[in-house]
Length: 121
View 1 (tube, rainbow, N blue to C red):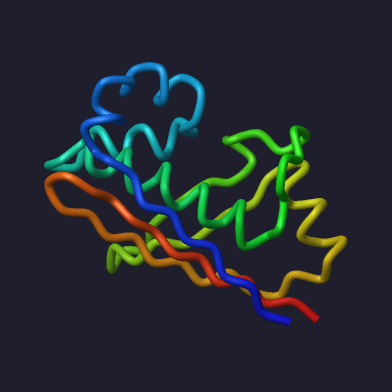
View 2: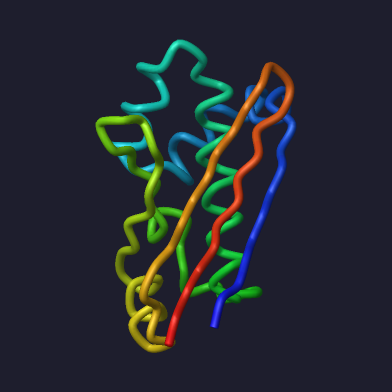
């Protein structure tokens, strides 16, 4: 089975709440990556959109047991993003037989978007 999740977000909206998002949504690794990028607000928006896209693709709906930090966005040396699941998100993935998550993130000045494709048995 394959599912898809996508999200788009206004970078200006993220920029207004940047400090709160860093504290509540991002892991330390994500924070460091975003703040060291040349465009921190765009990177934060991209990570936020990616977490939303993964959440949707995993069919989590309103599952309050999954925290923002249970879905971590990391990057290969090439810059390609990938997902690391922790805690309840990891347990959920194991329960549904998740075999792969593919992720794409894009951003421009005003918008960031992400798409996640989840595959499971």
